[in-house]
Length: 523
Image (cartoon, rainbow, N blue to C red; front, side, top):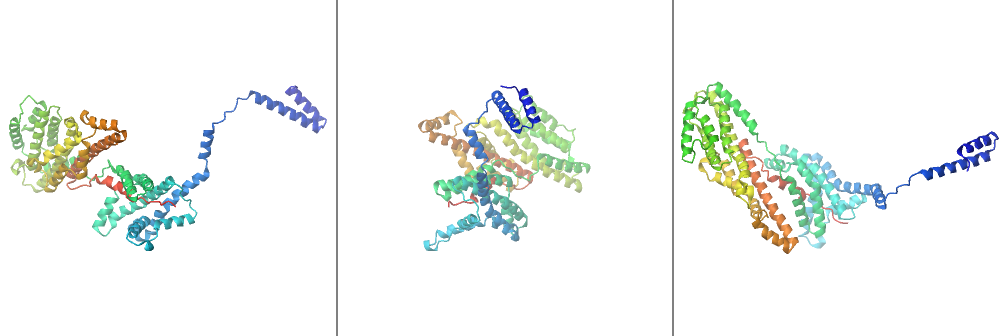
C-alpha cells in the first residue's frame, strides 16, 4: 500500500494536471487509510450498562418532571387562591380563605351524615378537583401522587396561615382570639417542617385503611415529634438577672444601705450551730468549713458582690460527691437564702433612706427570682447524679422525687408565692399523659429484671416483642422529657416572675398540622 507521502505527491500531480476525478479518488483512498489507522490504534469504547442508560433516560424524562410539577401546583393552588381571595378581609380573611376548602368539606361531610341520600351535598373538594382537571392540570394516578399533592397543599396552607395568625395575635379585637392566635402561631419553623410529612402520612393511611379518622390520627402522630425539644421563653437569663440585681445593690450601697456585717455574721454563726445537730462536724467537710468561715467573717462587707460570692462557696459544697456534705450544704443554702430574702430591718444599715431602701428592695426581689430559679436548676443537676438510685425510671423518678420533697417542705415553700406554690404542686403530681408514660416506661428493657418479659415476648413472637420494647422505651423517654420540661418551665416562671408558655404545648401544636392536612380523594 502506498505511503501517505506518496499519496500526497500523486494528489499534487492530479491537481496540476487538472484531473478532478483522479484527485477525488486519491483523496478518498487517503481518508480510508487514515480511518483504518485510527481504528487500529484506538482503545475499545466502554458501553454503559443497560441499567445506567435507563436511569439516565428516567432522569431526563421531561414529561415526568412536568407531571410532578403539575401535581404539586394542583395541591398548592386551593389554599393559595383562597388566601389571596381573603386578603381584603385582613389576617382573618387570609386564614379563612386558606382553610375554605377543607372547612367546607368537613361541614359537608358532617351534614351528609344526617341527611337522607337524596339530599346529600356534593363534595366541595371534588368540585375543586374537577375544576383543576378541566383547567388542564395533571390528575394524580396513585396514592404516592395524591400524597405529593396533599403535601404541597399542606405546606402552602401553613405558609399562608402562620403569618396570618402572627398578625391576628396583635390585631384581633377579642383578647381570647389574640391569645389563641398567639398560641397557634408559635414555633412556625417546626410547624412548616411538620406540614408535608404529616399530610403524606394522613393521605396514605386514609387510603390504605379507608378511614379518615385513622388518617387524621396518623397525621397528628407524625406531626407531634416536630414540636418536641422546642423551648420558647421570654424569661431573663441568670446573667441578666444578676446584672439587674447588681445595679440595684450598687445604688443601695451608694445610699449607705447594706447588711450590717456583725448582724449577718451572728446569724450565720447561729446557722452553723444548728447544722451541727444535722451531723456537721468542723474539719470533716472542707468545702462547708470554707463557706462558713467566709459567712461568719464580721469584717467583710456584705454587698451584692459578696453575697454572690458567698452563695458560690455554698453551691461548691453542694456539688460534693459526698452525700452527707451535699445534704448539709443544701440545708446551709436554704437558711442563707431565707435570711437574705427576709432579713429584719434591724439587720440592714440606713434602712430609713427611701431611695436606698427602694433600690435595696428591688435588688432583693431580683435576687429572690434568681434564688428560686436555681432550686429547679439544682434539681436537674441532682437528677443526673442520683439517676442510678432509680433503675426503673432513671432521671425521671429522681426529678419527680425532688419535686415532691420540695412540695412537702413547708419552710422552703414559704419562699414562693401562692401561685408559684400551686405550679410546684401541679408539677410534682404530673399530668395524666405524663403519669401514663411513666407507668409504661417502668417496663422498658433497661434492667435484667425487665429484660426477661420483653425478651420472652420477642422469642415467642418477634412482631410482639419488638413493638413492646419500642413502646416501653419510648414511654420512658417521653416521661423523662416531660418531667424535664416541667422543671425548666418552673425555673423560667421564677425568673420571669409569672407563668411562661408551657413547652409541652409545642408537640400538640405541630400535631395540629396533621389535622389540617388536605385530603385528596381518588378520581
